[in-house]
Length: 539
Image (tube, rainbow, N blue to C red; front, side, top):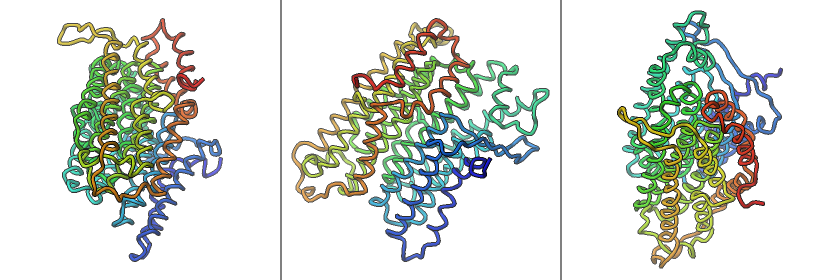
């Protein structure tokens, strides 16, 4: 077993930090194009290194080294299909964000790329950690670079937005600490517990099944859920996201929507639904209600926005509701749909924020009322914006349609609940009924996206915009690459679902298969068909 195989995960996590060194030693007068070139080259190297696993050229093994043995803390890293899907998405969007930075970031470039790479390290650490203490360290590390990236390179209200982001995340972190410590002390109290690995995922998961009362599981589930709900985000703890998006520079908005929100969704699936399945069964109805509120309410808020970037930000919050809906289905199809939505949204939202950034770089305004007639002035930007808007609203043969279809189907065949307990009574509302309501979000999404396109790109153009240049080569490269992937994964979802489907389905089969006892046999071929077919109409 060679060094690369044994330490692949550690190298992958810390490679971005190592690549900061050649950028920082650049002479002060050489910060411009040279810094951008080194930053893009470093991002490309990280992406290529992560691809070694995807291509099968490296077969990495889990790492586990004693760290603080007296407390049961280990430096433990590992992976599965779910984790690696998000790692690939992270490194790919890092590369896209670095290329996008070429036309949108013009000051303090060395510090900018240093913070961008530290952010990447922290996010990959969150996904690859297999020790809850290590997970918490990476979770908190992400705060520092994201705060600085918004506070230094953001818009006029960047101080407000960055501090709000930090306060909301710290609020959620309090519950993460509480939930983690509760699980740790329960594991510690069990006879025969391995005191050297008490924080490791497998130790904690085993301990949960050893006489942890349901009431305690529910309390821990709620604590962890609040943490991840802030990051996802979920109404009503979502208001930090539109402010952060509006003030963040374009590449950071791409990373924020494409990657950081997925930290919340990943945490929910990994800790809440995989580790605490009994509590998930009890709380699934309320999570589904939150999902519908997220989808419909924030879509309605997006409909009345006058700020172009804030409209896309609320659209992101709405689409994260589909992740919640898929998780609340408590079956293999719903879980796979939720993960697929995470991946699809990462591509589409990054492209939409890139489109907004191309317009803002030229006009320095986000007010929709200031636009109009841009289809003739910037046709390349228009066609990309139109295409990604269609992808966002779920046009067939594109990636959002394939992912949201899984979520809706998983919810429709789910037996998670048929009534919702409410103060001692039962509300006769099933998950299927809530899914019908969630469908309104798709209709409202089409309304705000089409209306936005009409106001921005059609009608008379103001005289001050008649000399605007169209998209640059770097902008076209980023948008064209994302466009090709949106089409590829929409037409043939198996390109990515083959990576996460076995592991995600195993979680559902292990913990929730009995909820659909009479449907398990029917779900397996349906799941296989939905994950491997060329989407509806492709044949």
